Image (cartoon, rainbow, N blue to C red):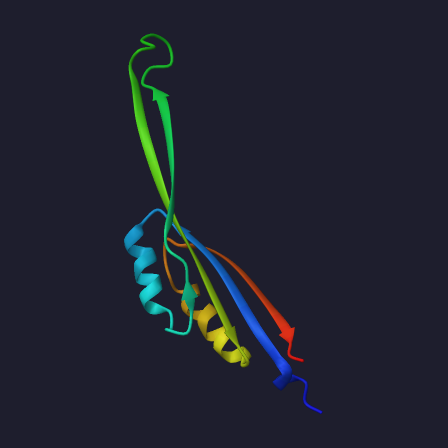
Length: 106
């Protein structure tokens, strides 16, 4: 009895980048079988003093925007999941968190 045909592999991918263009490119590179949610963004603002000793009113303000996306894929073949992970491995400036699990079919 072959149990490998009775398994479904799921791959959940959380991605984030400070470049919206890189995340959109990532969505276009992934196969159409992958479902994804919309882009969300986090804005982090911080203020630094220009001079540590004297003028306390002279400050610089900065802002960092981080975009994130969620992808989900199911497959009966483990090779398709590995191919997806290989594509993700070659993308620059994008951080990924990947969770792969297998679910037995009844």
